Image 1 (spheres, helix red, strand yellow):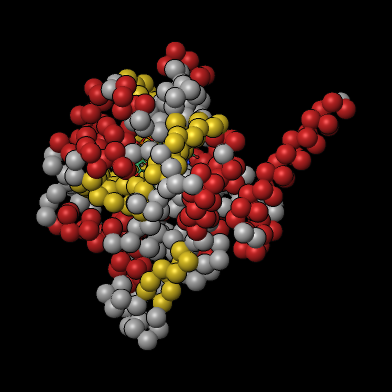
Image 2 (cartoon, helix red, strand yellow):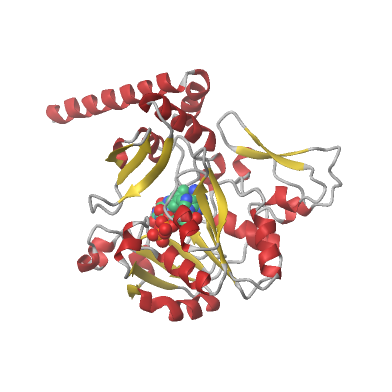
Amino acid sequence: MKLCTNKTECCGCGACVDICHAGAIHMVQDNEGFLYPQIDEKKCTDCGRCGQVCPIINKSRKNGDNLYLGVQIKDEKIRYSSSSGGMFSILAQYVLEKNGVIYGAAYNRDMEVAHIEACDLQQLERIKKTKYVQSNMEGIYCRIQERLKKNQWVLFCGTPCQVYALLLYLKKSYRTLITADLVCYGAASPGIWKSYIKYLEHRHGGEVTEFYFRDKRNKDNGQTCSYVAGGTEYASELGHNIYCKMYFADYILRPACHRCRFCDTNRMSDFTIGDFWNIENVRPKMDDGMGTSMVIVHTDKAKEIWKMVKDKAYWFECERKDILQPRLLAPTCAAKTRRLFMILYRILPFSYFVKMLRGVSVIGRRFRQLWKSRI
Ligand SMILES: Cc1cc2nc3c(=O)[nH]c(=O)nc-3n(C[C@H](O)[C@H](O)[C@H](O)COP(=O)(O)OP(=O)(O)OC[C@H]3O[C@@H](n4cnc5c(N)ncnc54)[C@H](O)[C@@H]3O)c2cc1C
């Protein structure tokens, strides 16, 4: 099996890089800011291992017979600092108590997003919280395999394509591995994220040291976005932040995300976690604006673990229809003008680009106001 070279068929999980013993594959950034594997034909031995770990070309066997849950971690401090209801932290605590290791996405010093390992609660803080940027997985697959071979407990949390890539990489199942994949809107361009961070640093005259996409200070289920630049904190509505606008207007997602085949309630993982979108209707009394996790428990192993950790949460069981949301049914559609957007991103300095986007939305808003006043 050969690696996909078509951009709409590469999810950028990077498992092919880790599996290549000849060191013939490395990731190269394209002009939209996404990483794609490039094969050095001189080093390639044609062994086909890269194709064997690709989560896009390999057909998946999905776990059914699911349990559907709404979950809020009892520890209010942890729930506040989690993006949803803190289900990830419940699983992480379980693994840390077994002296295990957690793998998840974190910011590095340059505010790039990459998967790291955490062995204690302090390191775990870096992994918590949603980052709407594609995470770099370089070296992670081999490290997890090393840990598992030593019989250590491992929790891996990431996008569904990353989880499936890990399972293909490992080839066999391990008793001590727990996988949790996310309900995923799509992975955004790390290159555009970097341009945005540089833009903020220039604008505020200081380094960006923190960025929180799902701040809950307004008890609005994380509809606030906040960051620290040059030592000062800035916060706004998620919908007013320019980067979030680009993300949720579907301009900056990876092309393969628009064809994602993991938008389903059946997955390869042990657990699927996301936001409980419909909480105000399903359990109105629990909707306090501080976040509720939607959890799908897929495997027998996951059901056993859930029995052991459920006392750490306020929770309820529900039906599949209660947890459904768009990204469990179909992938996000690309914006109609995505191609034009990317051309302008390439040719304009980022600050001009941002001004132009602001202009477009102001014009759009004025137009809508005008239109409303007519009818
Ligand atoms: C790109 C992206 C899109 C999402 N889209 C949706 C959606 O459409 N609907 C929905 O219900 N939920 C979505 N989620 C999931 C949701 O935002 C929460 O991450 C999830 O509910 C877990 O929250 P928590 O309170 O349990 O844990 P938290 O403590 O907030 O932990 C977050 C977990 O997410 C992982 N993570 C964070 N950023 C990334 C990343 N860039 N790549 C891989 N893993 C990451 C971390 O490793 C950590 O394990 C999305 C998450 C991401 C990262």
